[in-house]
Amino acid sequence: MNTLLIWPLIPLTYWGGQYSVKLIGRRAFMPPLGLLTVAALCPQEWNLRLVDLNITGAVSDEDLEWADLAFISGMVIQHSSMKEVIRRCNKAGVPTVVGGPHATSSPEKFDDADHLILDEGEITLPPFFKDYAAGCAQRVYNAGGEKPDITLTPLPRFDLLDIHAYTHMCVQFSRGCPFACEFCDITYLYGKRPRTKEAHQILSELQILYDLDFRGEVFLVDDNFIGNKKNVKLMLPELITWMKEHEYPFWLYTEASLNLADDDELLELMSQAGFHSVFIGIESPSVESLRETQKYQNIKGDMLGKVHKIQSHGMEVMAGFIVGFDSDTEDIFERQIEFITAANIPMAHVAPLNAMPNTQLFNRLRLEGRIEGEWEGDTFDFCNFATKLPALTLVRGYRHILSTLYTPENFFGRLRDLMGALKGSSARTLGRLNMTTKIKYLFPLIGALVKLGMLDKDRKHYWKFMFWVLRNHPDKWLFALCRAITGHHFIRYTEEVVVPRLGLLEKELQEKEQLLLVAAAS
Image (cartoon, rainbow, N blue to C red):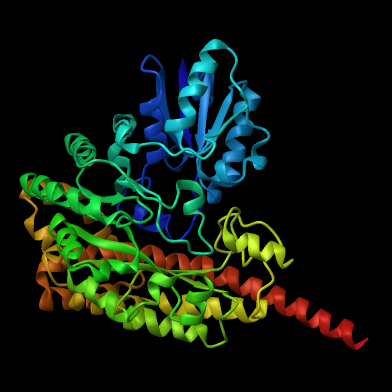
């Protein structure tokens, strides 16, 4: 069975990293771990071919002529590309098997697919394989609420990748989250009881990446890495041993909840294991908004102090923030800027609140009659519900936040403050790398160094920052360079795409407001 595993195009977004990927001469940010796991679950006799549209741009005619079957996965932000891939497969007569988080949340949007494999593939793929071989495959397979034991999940098929086409690699330790934030769909998709792999699985996955000659940043894609603290603490000592034995070939980062700051043992273990960054959903400096969205774990204690504590263990805090809560007032935009600046967070993902399917937020707003449309994962799908703050106020305030945060001066200012805040062993991770690893990691950065330092219009800010780092924190120069490259994407995307498009949206809303005023006066 010749089978395509197709990863649709991720459009230009903050977390797509497209400007930075281009800068360092790679072709895509991160591979599709879900499809690599699907590949591992496929019958061994099948011939598999991974097609990542973020590298190839499209599915080729040759691929479609070769294929007997096409597996397609994706997130909501990839919806348009998913539909185009299905259309092309249908036209070529290649049966389509669609799954992943977007299809699981909104299966009704894929009536053009031949088969839907919903929920987690460890449960739903085996019966599909059996039925397909017997010629009696159903159209829809779901898990009926069952969650798989991921200690039995096979190793992802990293061998299918052009591994050096990517800037980052990824592995997964756990699924699920114990918290119940109103806007989040993770508990719907993966449950409230975090399930974990065993240490030997993670080490085996890292060993494969090592043997494939990858060196650099590895993302543990868990939605909450510390959701099951007991198992994390059992795994980390073994990870520390492996990293030391291999002279720290990877720079690790993950996602976690803010209560990470309350556990000194866990902070130190992660630091010793080589975690350099953690993404945290902070959402808002407003206690009222946090309480509204059931983000109770962020209300306990001093949020700013907790961020600083994590940084004091050598881990950068990247963070998500949201505007548009019912409790938000017109000062929320300045409050967000002030918090992000005081927290030394260079990479802050600020987004308007949207109600995703299968969330408590969507259900509440639907009962209140406030849902106004569907969210497709785009930064500019602005609040798909009737907000308490006027839409024009939200758009104007949102544009103000982003245009303020991502000026070169402000971005490098926060990055400079972060350099001073980072302490502990993780801050020195790259200093522990052996020379071979350093060279492999540095080669892709050389071109970026030239482009940023000589060709980029903001080069004066870059050099000012880098010289400051070399004078004050020379042991962190490589981390500083990497973050400057990441910042290039955030700065350029904001300047060239986000601010202009939000300006157009603001103009449209102003015109609508004027028309309403004219209509009311007549």
